[in-house]
Structure formats: C-alpha cells, structure tokens
Amino acid sequence: MTIDWQAIEIMHSDVKALPESLRRLAADMKLVAGSVLAHVGSRPKFMYFVCQGELRLRRISVNGTEVVLQRCTSGFVAEASLESSAYHCDVAVIENSQVLTFPIQAFRAILREDVVFCQFWMARLAREVRTLRAQCERLALRTASERVQHYIESEGRNGRLALRQTRKAWAAQLGLTHEALYRTLATLVADQVITLTQGQNQLIITAIGAKRR
Amino acid sequence: MTIDWQAIEIMHSDVKALPESLRRLAADMKLVAGSVLAHVGSRPKFMYFVCQGELRLRRISVNGTEVVLQRCTSGFVAEASLESSAYHCDVAVIENSQVLTFPIQAFRAILREDVVFCQFWMARLAREVRTLRAQCERLALRTASERVQHYIESEGRNGRLALRQTRKAWAAQLGLTHEALYRTLATLVADQVITLTQGQNQLIITAIGAKRR
DNA sequence: CGTACTTTTGAATCGCATCAAATCTGGTGG
DNA sequence: CCACCAGATTTGATGCGATTCAAAAGTACG
Image 1 (cartoon, rainbow over the protein chains, first blue to last red):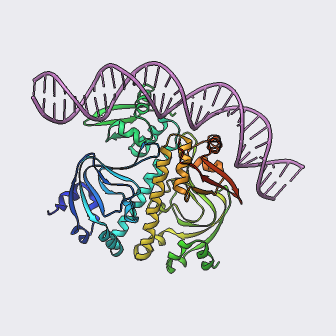
Image 2: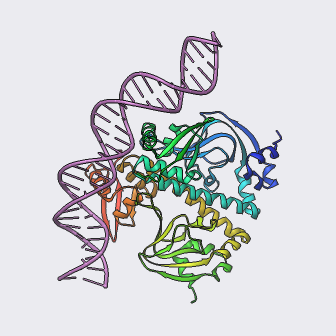
Image 3: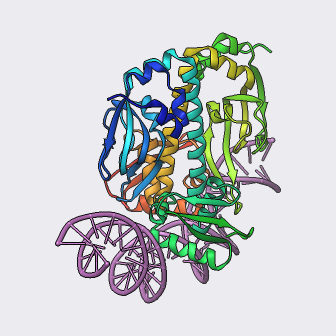
C-alpha cells in the first residue's frame, strides 16, 4: 500500500506542498461512479485529495433540484469541511475516481504546527472564495446567454474555453436546464457570438464578437 | 490617533484574535456613504476591518446589473484580497462607516509568523466558503419564493430572521428585482407561509408552515 | 416642508422551465 | 462486427414567473 508520490506530484503540483508527516498518514482509495463519499450532516473523518476521476459537491435543494456547488477533478475536496463538525453538502462520485485520504484530526494538527503548509492551505481557501464569488455573480445574471458568456470569460483563456464536461452537466453548474443551455448555445452560434469545435473528448468554445445579451 | 481596542473588542469579538504586533500598525478611518473604498483591478494596500457602518463587495456585471457578493457590517472585508495582487470586486461604502486599516504587507508577514492568528484566519476563510456555497445554492433556486425561504432557513434561527437591511437591498442579494421580492413577500404572507413584524428599525420575518413553493 | 429613497401595485412582455419526443452517441455484450 | 442500451443531445409546444416600465403612496432625514 505504498503511494507513489512522485507520480502523483507530476499530475498534481499541489501535492508538493504536503509535508512528510502528512504523507505518512495518507491512504489510497478507489471510488465507484454513482456512490456518495459523504452525506450532508455527517461528520468529516478524512480530507480527500482527488488524483483521478471526478467528485462533486452538491446539495439537493428544497424542491428537488440538484445544485452543483463545486466540481473536483484534481486537488483537495471540500476544504471547508476541515473546520466544521458536519458536511454541509453531499460529496458525490461522478466518475470512477482515485483519491488520497488523510485522517482529519492529523490534518488539523499538522496545520497547527507547519507554518508553510498553513500558508499553502490559506491560499487554497482564498482561491476557493474567489471562485465562489464568480459563481454567485454568474448565477445572479438573468439570462442564459449572459451566464454562458460570463463563464467563458471567467473560466476560459482569451475567450477560449475547453469544456471538460458534458453540456448537460454544465447546464446544472450554470443553474439552467439542459434544454435552455442547448438552445442558448445554438442561438449564440447562429448569431456568431461563439463557435463550437469538437476537440478530442471535449468541446472547444470560442468567443468571437464583442456582442452581448 | 490611539485606538480604543477594548471598546472595539466588546462589539467585535474577532478583534481579540489580533496579535499585538498587528494592532500597533492599525489606523482608524472614516468612510462616507456612496464612496468606493477599492476598485476592481486595483492593488490591495490595506486590509480593512469594519467597526461601524456597512461596506459591500459588488460587481457591476456585463449588462449593468449590480451583483452583491458580500455585505460587511462587522469584521474583515474581502479576505481573499490578502492573497491576490488585484481586487476582484469593488468595495463600496453603503453607510457612513468606521474601519480599521492594516498595511497589507505587514498583515501577510504576521500571518506567516503567528500560528495562532493564522489558524484564526483560516477559520474565517472556511466560514466564508460555506456562506458563499449557501448563496450559490440559493441563487440556483428557480423561484423567488424558494429563495426567500432558503434565506430564512439558512440565515435565520428557527425560522425567524431579523432583516438588517432594506427589502430592496435584500432583493439584490437574492438576485431578484425589488418588485419581485415585494410581490413574493406579499403572497407568502397571504398564503400564511410567513409573517412580517416591524421591529425597531428592522423587519422580523417568521416562517409559519412547512408549506413550500 | 421638501427631497430622496423605499415600498407598493399595475400591466405587458420575455425568457426559461416543463413536458414530450426524436435522434445521436459511446460503450456493452452477444 | 453488430444489435442494443443508457445517456446525451436536439427540437417543439405551452405556460408560468420574473423582468420591465410606469406610477403612486409611504417614509426618513436635514
């Protein structure tokens, strides 16, 4: 059960910040798509780090709609769970995944002792805050078209975005039904605001004009 | 220009966690309603702590709508600015306010040295993440009524909520127009889902039934 | 007492959700 | 290799709910 840290570091540079003491406590774990790693309200026992696959933080809202709060395909999951005594969302396994697990008590202890790692962790949280603020901003936009363009601008590079998920999943993240997203993309293409190109296993979206709305 | 820390600590318990070294660098500052403390894109020079008044993190979105990302009436503002070289939102002064300012370089340095304060700061960030996740969840709800009830549940206590802002401002936070919110509140009252009581200078909202939608 | 702002109500319009159904796709097992 | 299946994609029709524009009434504050 030895973990090949070097191999993991190549894929996930975040791992480099992990102190030796934490690495010794890590364990390897495989997860099956469709399962749920943690439920709302349950007590966090481990911190998880995604090496492969995809997890999602989600909540089933009052009326039954699924709300995606975060997609995790690489890196730590649910950083905020470190501080709290209960998960505030479900952690769902979307694809077969491989994760590292760290006992949460030990994690907390090391965070208290290791200043460098503490720094690193704070930076992670701050980044998370920024991402969430962007998402709030996006969800407050009133039309599907605006949300799509906002997403391209804030998540893409120079108006180019490689969509690493299905459009259906993207729709959930944008707070739209998949039908609405399909239609919106179609009209945006027709109006020459964006172009869609099929890359290998992912859709490439490119913004063209400065046209809005 | 001496700051009365004891007086401030009574109102804002967060201040107790501030190490002496940081306190020595603090300065007092009064802000006028309507002004803007920091603009998107500008470089953070100070960390701000709100003693009195109200600041808001906001962004003017693509189509001109104001999006409120955070209201600050007490405590640190824009925690994430600590890590970044530019503000990612405007910091607007809503009411005449009094804030403490801390040179950001020094703030960072002390965070590197003082483990206890670092702990405290991490906890703040984690709380912020949770709040933002709740807001994302709320904004993804499709109807005004659901957002209102979600807000009452997540921000209130036992189905009771003291609204510390105007309904118009609340509407912005909920991603609604003020008209929509007024109408929604009216129908929720009519349907006996909530009651509204006028407290001193604030509206008290109480959820009654388990009725949804 | 006037001004600026919030609160309230009305009417028309628009965009998305919803329900439905057809097609396309990748992956599976025979 | 092909038939088949589950899921994603796509298109259509309809209705609801929020936006929008407008205007009046209420409220706080100097």
